[in-house]
Structures are given as structure tokens and as C-alpha cells.
Image (cartoon, rainbow, N blue to C red):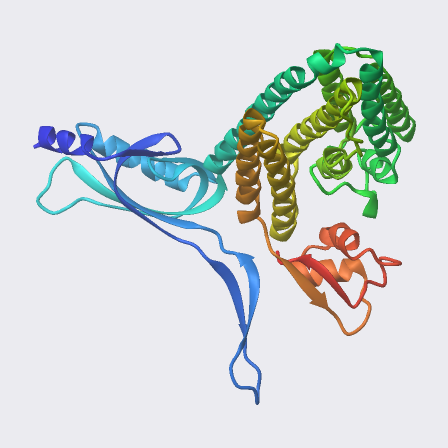
Length: 432
């Protein structure tokens, strides 16, 4: 009989809780939103208030069998009685950190060597989602690298013959790089970049906090932050000047990429990275057409150089999107649509110009970025409009809306009040 049960167990998927294995017969779950139903006198119907996502519950049914089945039962009992959350490895749900709300076992009548077990788990963390997000970030990096290589190769093929015409053509390409580089020079000196740098300081910086996954440096001081920002400005100016001195297509493409990547890496906040790189990705120039050989070469070199500048900026934007952490589903969806539209336009221009390789590279980059942003948006709370009859302090609103006064800085950042003690009577906030 035990051999038959062992063979039966091999036909089912294996599972474990706190490292104790058992066989899964069936699984189920519950999910949804928390709702508070408010009933008022002399009013038909009720008002349902959304309180955020409910904790996901999983019901797992299985059994243990074999010569050590009683020992396995005892180990599961010990695991069920252990304090704090534990690790559940499920064949279809993946790796979950869960708390056990109920565990029961039963020895079936007339069957020896087998014990049925039932579990009710509450999810604390889904590690599978982390694995998926990491894979999406890696896919964006691979697509961005491919777009950089294809862009450099295409640019070299398009302008090498034009650059060989002479110094006027090279000077025209360098002039385009200089005009585009001035956007990077202005961006690194912008107030928004200064705010992102301030947000790295430890402590409560109020409305100056980054809000988009900007890391806090516990050892940073005002002087060290300003020194680092000054060094970044000097480095970017040096790279722009270096790009304007390049005379070959390959070196120009590499120098342009160095500028966008240095700008991205110099800014702590990915949200700010995206905002300052977007104008560089939509850079346009006016080219005067000419039938003369040198005039045609200048027009080709200028147009292609402006294109490579935009392409490299797009790859840096994609890398910034991979580390960006939106705070609401609307914020993620708005950026997804904006970036997708820009990439679509750039890919269409490349296709119209007969640059099939660039079109494929940009389309692949768009797919990876939009998939990543959709994944992030699906896991975030919605944005709602908060209305009050009179101005209320931010700390009070944090307690009223979220039962957590520490959420006040986020409310201040979203509402941008004249003073945190007098919040606007209407503003946008997160639903949970």
C-alpha cells in the first residue's frame, strides 16, 4: 500500500512550507479590495468606501505519505506553530512569504500511511513578482544596448562618406552636437536637478524629497552634495567639448552616448533623469536643402547627427525608466503613454527614411519599456481627489486618510500647499 501511495505522490506537484515538503492536491485563493460600507438614516442605498487592496489568501490542500509520514506531519505542526512569517514554495504560485492563519490534518478512514493536510495562508510578499521585475529591467537594458549598437552602426554608414568631403561637413556635424549638448549643460544646472541632489541628504526634506526611488546617502552633507553636483557639471561640459572635437562617425556616436549616460548617472532621481532627457530625445534642427555636392553632404551629416543624438537619448531614457518607481497607477500610465508615443514617432521617422534596423531596434525598446511600465502600474494604488470643507494640517490628513501621519510628506509634495498646516481643500492623493 505504501508503494502505491509513493507512486501516487510522484504524480502530484511538490510543495513546501518552512522547508517541510508535502504533496499538493489542489489550491485556491481569495483576492479583492477592502470595503467599508456606510449606511445613513433617511438615505436610500449605502456609500462604499475603498480601503485598499485586501491581503491575498491562499488555500492549499495536500497530503504526506511514505514511511516517514508521521514525522513529516509533526514537522508541519511545528512549522505551523512557529512565530512570524515563513517561506512557501508552491509549484504554480511561486515563492511567497506568508503567514499561516490555519492548519489542519486528518488521517483518512481505511487508508494507512497517508495524512491529509490543509493550509490557509496570508501573503506578505510575492518573490515571483520581484523576479519578473528583475527580468523586465534586464530586458530593457539588453534592448537599450542593442539600440545603441544599431544606432552607431547606422550613423557610421550614413555619414562616413559625407564627412570625408572635408572640414565644412565635419564642422556642421560638430555644430549640431554642440547645440544638442547645450540642452544637457542647461539640464544639469536646472532647479529640478538641484532638488534631486538635495533629496539625497538624510532627514526630513519635506517637499524637496525626490519621490521616485532616489536613494538617501546617510553620510551626505550639503557641502558634499554641492561638490558632487559641481563635479558632474564639469564632467558633462568636458564631454560636450570632447564630442565637438570628434571627426569620425564612430567617435561622434560614442561621444554623444557618453553625454547622455553621464547626465543620467549624475542625477539621483530617475524621475528627474527622464524629465531632463526628454527634450534631448526630441531635438530638432532646420536643414537647408542644397543640390551642390558639399551642401548635400552638410545636410546629410547634420540630419544624421541630430538623429543619433536623439536615438542615444532615447536609450538613456529607457534605462532611467527601468529604475523609476512611480507612486500611482496614473503616474505610471501617463509616462508609459508619453514615452511610447515618442518612441513610436522616432520609429516611424526611421522607417520613412528607410532605416529598417533602427525601426526594429526602437520598436523592441518600446515593447520592453511599455511592458515594464504596465507591470508597475498594475501593482500601484490609484490617484483620487481629496476634498475637505476647510484647510486641515497635513499630519491630520495623513492620519485621517491612511491612519499614518508619516504619510504627510507625500501629501505635501502632491498638494504643494503654501504651508503644511493649511492644506488645500481639494487636491490629488493616493487611494491607499
